[in-house]
Length: 307
Image 1 (cartoon, rainbow, N blue to C red):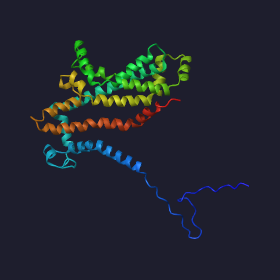
Image 2 (cartoon, rainbow, N blue to C red; image 1 turned 90 degrees about the vertical axis):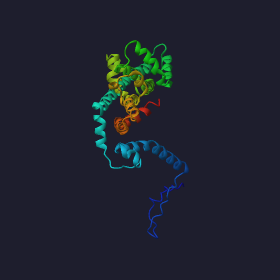
Image 3 (cartoon, rainbow, N blue to C red; image 1 turned 180 degrees about the vertical axis):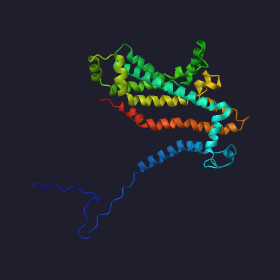
Image 4 (tube, rainbow, N blue to C red; image 1 turned 45 degrees about the horizontal axis):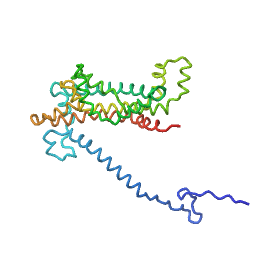
């Protein structure tokens, strides 16, 4: 006759001892050395990336004199609103113009780049045509090519057609995202079922309607990821506007702040204005990351596994 073994009980859930009325002592889990090392490395990495942001927040609250005459990592008579008011009103509100330009370049460029990447990635994933793999390999080559290497050729080409020193000279190159095409193709292959597409075609839906009403909705996590990456890339882009633009009223924030920094030798107050402007320029990026981070994580992982 087989006896059924009693289930093992954990020390913290075991019944009390009948003789003493106490429970067995709970054993403490000893952290493994590998986990301790991992936490230490991640903590150092977090400090490495967050320390400059903390310094920027502290420096943006200081006057131009206390910026050099006080401890850099602590506040000294904070006057953040006063400093930001000076930044926004300097030189006939030029900083606000730069901020609007950056929103135009990054916002419109990221939206158009996301739509173009979605269309190209979906076509490469679901349509059969000659040379499809060659086109995809060409896109992968574009991922490896640095954007700075294309700035001068783009300038020479745009100067021939009169698009230099214009908003189009910065917007047109910004709507192309090889990484976005790559991500959208990988995601569409995994997330967009062929049976759903065939059912929509049987019901009489055209390819444009299928793409805009069905495919875009299914691919929304990947599209948010592409939008976020492209928005950050265009917002922080410096070299392309430097090459394309010559009128300061069309500068983005990145290029405008550099002009302030270069003039700080003649106008010392511009040092504080540059720091305050850099602080304001971080706010839209931080807001976008906080709002879209859950879609960003989903978009990175959902298309990585194929059934």
